[in-house]
Length: 350
Image 1 (cartoon, helix red, strand yellow):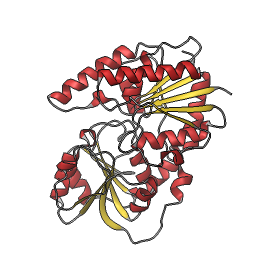
Image 2: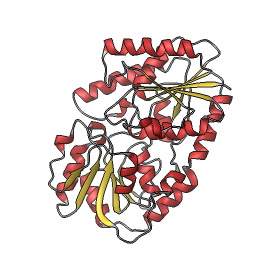
Image 3: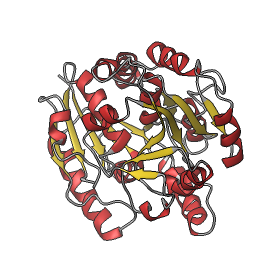
Image 4: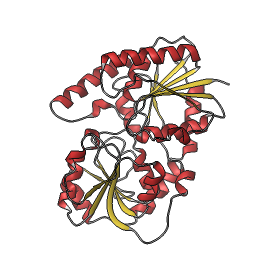
């Protein structure tokens, strides 16, 4: 049986859910390892989310953001495990693991893959954030010359990947419908609540979320998650839950009618796919990832700014919810995703 090692620093949120789903479909075909970093949003009982055949190994020096000393130490850790495990396939996830992992010297027989899960250089901010985005872009261009295949998680991310590498494909993220069906409710006791899920950080744009909430003072807003920019959520009609167990999140959101994603950039957000599966009426920013799954006014709504959101929220049609569910069931199944990954791992030459 071939051995595959996944390397991930961003072990939380959508990437965590994606890996749990992906590896559950790989364990019958591969000997699967995950070299991971611990984050605040990593579930306390994270081992329970994975098949028992998946071997989980912590990289103690993985840290969020740039830290040359820690990053070098993490490189040494990952390199040591790669040399001892001798995997046939290495799959790197998100920018930190993608950067460190592509600097390692592999033997000519090992296949290396990298999934960005939302390129950091897509941040359209000003000042320091814009400078960081330019630095990330140049780093991706340099690392894109390494002998690795980029597997984008949406068509939009694939188009961006072509700017930094000549070796890329795309496989859409997916949902685990069997798991989600355990939480799906079909009652009419819906609550007119607008919710989102994720880390409260610049990427998710809590400033815009807060501004929209202020414009709708009689509507309840819920942010499921936590993060460093929690202080920006000042509107009195916003509830912040903090980090919750996945099962608690899926139960909590069942009666909520509306889902919003105010992100500045994404890969293909799992939270959006799951909200669509639950037939929520979804409102998302006009960015890569969001617009690769939502067709405006058909299965959800795409907005460009606060005023655009308010207009579409005022005039939405409930039929988009069931349509969203239909799209997800047909095009974004876990089984299809796993099949495409196995095909990529086995058939792509590097």
